[in-house]
Image (tube, rainbow, N blue to C red; front, side):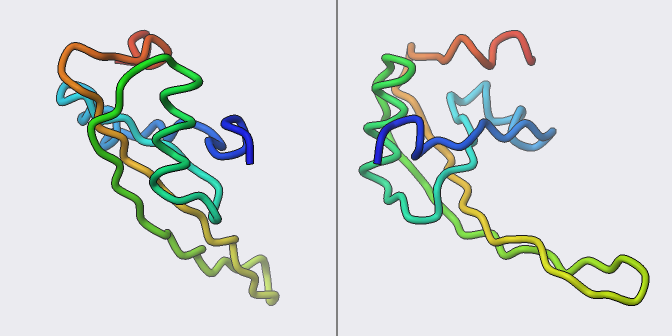
Length: 95
C-alpha cells in the first residue's frame, strides 16, 4: 500500500482543529492500515517526524431514506502526534 492509499483525507472538525495547538493532526485512513504504515505515510508525504499514532475504528451510522434503511460504511480514524517543533503546513491555513 502506498502512502497516498493509506491516508484517505484529513479530518476537519471543530474537535480535531482544537488538537492542532498540541501538534495533533487527525486523518481518515484505510481500514487495513496499521500504526506503522500510518506513521511512515505521514512522514513520507509531509516530511515531518511523528511522535505517536492513535487509531480507532468508527462504525458506520444507520440512515433512513423513506422506508428503506441503509448503513454508511465503517471507517478508521488516526490521530497523529508530531514531535515538538514539527507542523504540517496544509492545516495552518485552517486555524
